[in-house]
Length: 461
Image (cartoon, rainbow, N blue to C red; front, side, top):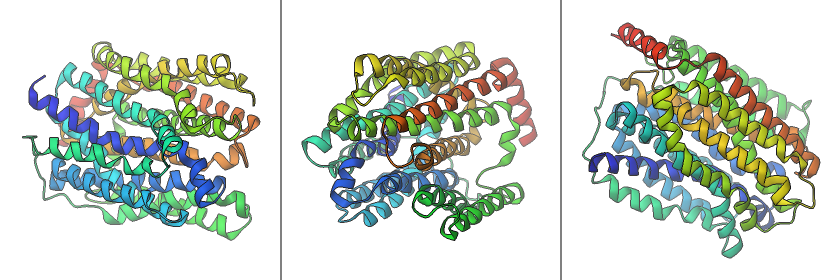
C-alpha cells in the first residue's frame, strides 16, 4: 500500500466513521434525551429516524453530486455540513429543534458515505481492493456498533449533548488529511442531478415512516396516519417510475439487472434492518428495564465491535480469494442464531449467561458478512459505476434500519420490557436468517460474476 493509498483509506474511514457513528451513538442517549427534553417512545424513534430519512433518501443524490463535482469536494462539503449540524444538535433547547437538526445532519451525512467508498474503489484494485473494503467496512460497521459505548460514557460522565459535539474532533482531523490527497477524481459535467427524484424519494420514505411511528398515538383509522401512508406509497411508486424513464436517473434500475448487485441489495435490506433494530433495542432495554447506567449498556455490545475490528479485514481478504457466497450465507445465519440465544434474557439481567453468548455469535456472524457483502455488490459493477453503486447500497442499508426502527412501536408496543425485547430479538433473527438464505441462493462467486460484469460493461459501451 502506497502512502497515498493509506491516506485515501484513512480519509474514507474517518469520513464515513462519523456518519455511521451518529447513526447509532444516539441510541444509548435516548432515555437521557427523553428525561431532559420530554417525549416517549415515538419521540425516541423520531430522534433516530429524522437522521435516517434524509440520509437514506439523499445518499442517491450524493452519488450524482460526487460524479458532477468530484468526490473530494463533496466529502469536504459534507464534513463542514456535518460539523455545523452536529453543533446544532448539541445546543438544541427542545426536542423539536433536535429532530429538525438531526434531519439536517442526515443531509450532510449523505454526502460523506458514497464518496468515501468511491475513492477507495478508484485507488485500489483486485485483492488489495477487497482488503481495503474490508478495513473500511470493519471500521464503519464498528462505528455503528460502538456508538452505544461512546454515547454511554458521554451520557453518564458529562451530558448527552456531547454525543453530538464530539464529532467536531474527527471532522477536523479528516479535513486536514483530505487536503493532502492528490486524487481529485474526474468530473462529469454532463451528468444531470435528479432533484425531482430526490423529492419523491424523501416523500416516499418519510411519509410511511411518519405513519409507522405515529400510529401508536393516533391509530390506523385516523387520516393523520393512513393519508401519509397512502401518499408515501404513491410517491415511492412515482419515484421508481421516474428512475425507469428519466434520461439520467439518480438510481439507474439497469444496475439491478446485474445479479450480485440485485441479490446483494436485497440481502442488505434484511441484514441491515436487523442491525438497525438490534443496536437500539438491546441498549435501551438494559437501561429502561434492566436499570443499567448508559455506560454499561453501551459496553454490553462492545464485544461485537471488537470482533468486527479483528476479523472483518480477514474475511474481506478470504472473500476476495474464494468468493463471497459462502460468507454471505453463513454469516447472517450465525448472527440470527445469536439473537435467538439472547431470548433467555429476563428483567433481572444476567449478562454473562443470558446475553454474552448470543452477542459473541452475533459479532462473529456480522464480521463474516459485512466485507464480502460490500465486495460482492460493488465488485459486480464497473469502476465508473462505483459511486452510484455504493450510494444505492448505502441507501438500502440506511432505509432498512430506518423502517426497522419505525416499526418498533408495532413490535414492542409501548415499552421495551421483557416481552418487547423478546419480540424484537425474534424479528431480528428472522431478518438475518432470511438475508443469509437469499445470499446462499442468489449470490454468484467470481467466475460467473466476472463474466456477467464483462457483459454489462460491453452493453454500456
